[in-house]
Image (cartoon, rainbow, N blue to C red; front, side, top):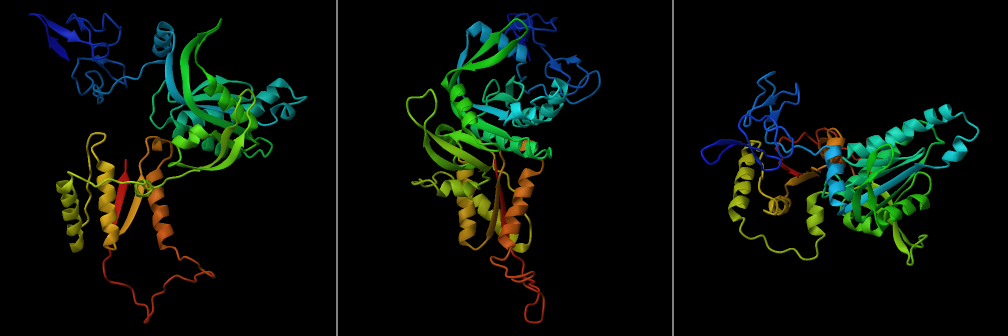
Length: 392
């Protein structure tokens, strides 16, 4: 937005906080546009504009621009590298040499390319970065250069998506193995004679590669470090401590099975010591008042909004527990940051929860265990109440 300087109206750059001449279109310090750039036609609008003056498209002037790959590499070159905690994936095609032995190189490429494309697509779906592609595999990073607090969970979800995509190709001989490790590395820009790329240095990358080499075809192996930070979100089986080539001590290894979409209530109940909810009586009473309105058959939708750490999840948990104590059925689902990769994921999760709760526990034959309408079992006319909670 324009800032009032010493008797001169200056243009303020939102990217680097530098002041510019009011006639400038681009910042003198960083070269970024001073106004809002239309994503449809590319027109640069005045700061504070809500709609494009050229094509009338809505502008997102307040949205922070994501740095380009060139800007990231330039910053890393200038700084010499940065320490980051991230998750590294290595994935490759099992027995790739045997699959293409005595095969024309072009035919080999056509057979391998769909697998490589499937692995790259899975990584990109969960906002990871593929920084290396070999003839039969990839290396991918989660948590840098795009920071995500759930980078380990994203990596696990991407690995499972890889396996599912490759299986969907319909070639039983094409199987991949995946290794995942979470740890601290130094991210750096690496320049060779042809191009500049993004790479990491540190033992974390080597350990992820070792996990991939130890995995069986169709298997995903995690280190104990990755399993520890994802234990609430994924299901994994411990394979015990195994010797890893190059390391002096054995490493605990886990086999990844699936992503667990556990409701937040399960996570809260798993905590050994849960403190009392304090200072949220007014908000809790407001939720109870909305619930009371449903007794008259009126549906209610309530959104709980607040800053991080405000206690939104805990408030919803206490409300859900109070509903359960009163015999009200509660359906929960979690809205994950990477949920955009799966269309209607939360809706399908809710439907699965409803289906599981209404299914008979032990049906003995087709139709057994399901109530039927009859004189002895008339249709219920009494309205029942349920509570839906979406955790974000």
